[in-house]
Image (tube, rainbow, N blue to C red; front, top):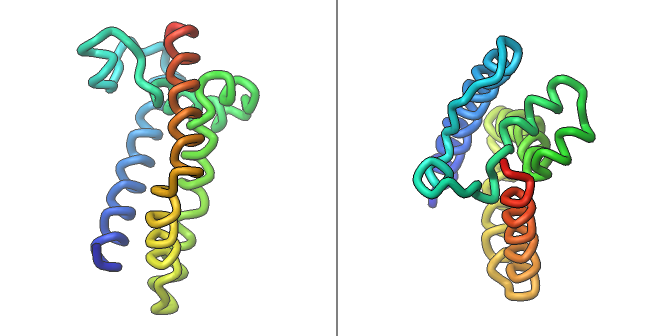
Length: 136
């Protein structure tokens, strides 16, 4: 994948993420919503590993850090990405550098190593089991 394509995809994903989060924050403030965007949960009735991530981010926006972690720890990771990545992309674009792209390529090569991939997959499975147990 080229640098420009990656930056475009990340920009679109961030824009969509912020729009979705704004909508979810609005819905949360006007009352509980019964809508679930999760295809896995809608088809099977079982929560996926990332179910509750939006609610976790909404809890963070409301200053409820403990509730955010308990809802879904993946939300914390998403929050960090959504805070840092826009500034990092702007820095790269403004300076003509490609630090995001280089770090992405390094991450891509690193995450496939067995000693890293296996623990990450196990953490996702544990989070999935926890989501199911919580009844998300």
